[in-house]
Image 1: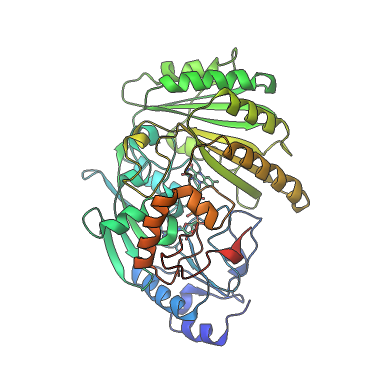
Image 2: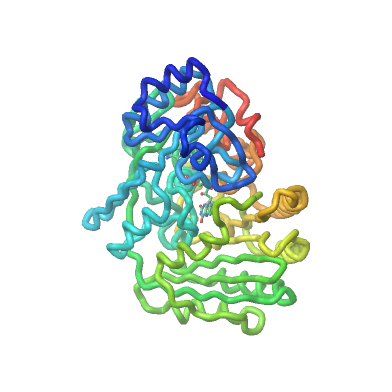
Length: 458
Ligand SMILES: Cc1cc2nc3c(=O)[nH]c(=O)nc-3n(C[C@H](O)[C@H](O)[C@H](O)COP(=O)(O)OP(=O)(O)OC[C@H]3O[C@@H](n4cnc5c(N)ncnc54)[C@H](O)[C@@H]3O)c2cc1C
């Protein structure tokens, strides 16, 4: 879609080299996002290089009334970081990461990917607790919460956020922390992109001790027994250890990850190789950066995805039966249940302390349909939706906004619960009363200005 006259005029005020219009050679590749189900054509993609330019773009975008999509890594399941006929503010040029090992702090640009963060911190043997796929954007991941291998030990990504530089809906640039705009700092930590554009995150970093990684596969006939074994062992695991599963119709893959200075890793992860008789696999010799990119290709750009997640209070026999049954009916070999073990440091923080909701969960689960051929859309979407609904019925109240293909007011309200949603809505009315930042799991401003993301659902 070509920019209209008024938009053209406004874009003319920006440096030419940061504006990509539909005639630019790079437009076709830059308009794409990770999930190939999403195929939208913005009128312009703007790629600012610094916070002042971000502020200018926000001010201009607000005057057009057009949809404004904010993009870091482009990994939003429902495609929040693009739109039809509006403006995409692509932060990917602002991906610098600097680490101060003495102060144990990392400054991360709002457009950085996890691999940018991990590579910069790994040089010093340090880590920012974050996710498990290296091409995920640090921006979106952090603002929703951020969970990964080291969360049980060091907390969610937001629990390690010290401060943020934020461009608000009126273009103002704020330094936000516990002592500066603390209400906004609360909302940023789990409220998604609702409250502003973060151009710089400052994180606390931690020493990443030696890691131990064990990976084992269990055949479909042993899935239920293996999950029961995992449930029992996971309850007793130290917080330096976490576990993920990938459950497909071909069977169960369990990964046990240990990170600690005491050299007990191998011993601690080994029992996960014998959950239902011996699994097929063993300890893997890999460093943290290799682990972080292990799933990059499987979860690559350009595939078709539907995801729905939730929290389990525990992995009880009913849940296990449901997952085993659903996975045996998956539409293909790649569609899976992913699950990550939480608790530990994540649960040390009270649910009221940040906008993120679901701190007492033992596991986060994600039902994800994954396929490549558009002809299979109906079959794969139908399995993903059914799997999601059936597991939702067995899940805790509260949810993680970052891993949901479904959108709409109901999704946000269920994710936060009524009381917290109302608090977020009041904050939204204060910082973004006209709902400029509405392409996200949207929180409608308390006075009810606009219908959230109605026209951008998958
Ligand atoms: C392959 C894959 C692996 C994943 N693994 C994990 C995982 O291990 N742990 C986990 O917790 N989550 C994980 N997720 C979920 C992930 O956190 C969300 O998809 C998240 O939205 C991705 O952020 P992004 O910057 O790549 O997305 P984008 O599509 O660029 O943005 C998503 C949303 O965040 C907002 N946003 C992004 N950056 C900024 C910013 N700087 N300022 C303001 N708003 C911003 C956007 O407006 C948009 O609403 C994974 C997702 C995928 C697709």
